[in-house]
Image (cartoon, rainbow, N blue to C red; front, side):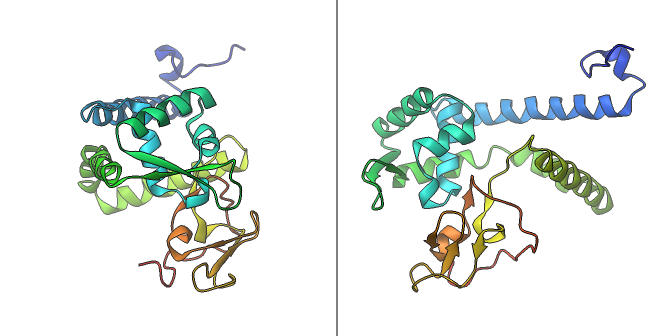
Length: 218
């Protein structure tokens, strides 16, 4: 029996699973297109826009070329080129890590923060349409997508950066000092209240989900 393919309209016509896969593909294409338009409208390439948003929402230790490469799924040379262009535009700067001078931490400038503010509105049209849906429909959609995401992560087909304080390796209020009151057992580092509410590429789902409110993060 030949394998059915979601891109074949005849084969997927009577197969609900294939229809779902194809709709997910269409949504992915739409979201990518909207995100690309948002980036180009302010003089950035889509990759540069994704770099800025990743750095805006990631913990300090993850703001490196290594983690950008891992998150964006492109070569280190490609990411390095995008980063250098952003530095020339005055949107980023880099400084050596205090732990390892060979590692350069990437930081947004004030202008870079402003660009992120403009980029973060890219999903507004989709958000507005979803807000107009009935609460019960939103609940079913959310539950279904949450279950699918969990299954994909369990099958190691999907990696999703999430905030540190929901990670299985995060130990809230067990850090060494008031500046870093939380602790990451994976990386053996203290986390500031701000970093605990930033996403991390090494995030591991906790068996005991924690709330997102971390004292001192405001």
